[in-house]
Length: 85
Image 1 (cartoon, rainbow, N blue to C red):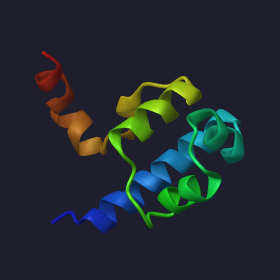
Image 2: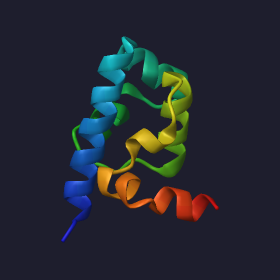
Image 3: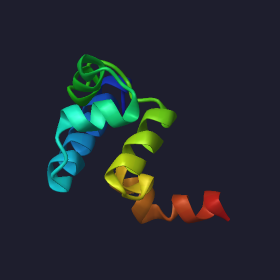
């Protein structure tokens, strides 16, 4: 069973990984998304949840597809294509 805590932790780690790969500093991501740095840091650590809007804004700043923030099981199962169709 997936809990909110495990989902928040997984997503926080994924977002942090994508930020690190982008070469953009977390402070810049926070500033460009309009999110206080302390809030971003809390979400990256899994202490609080990202909203859909948060993910979209972060993806825009990082110039990546928001789907990279979906768990692999959703991408592999084709659920993304089914919903988008």
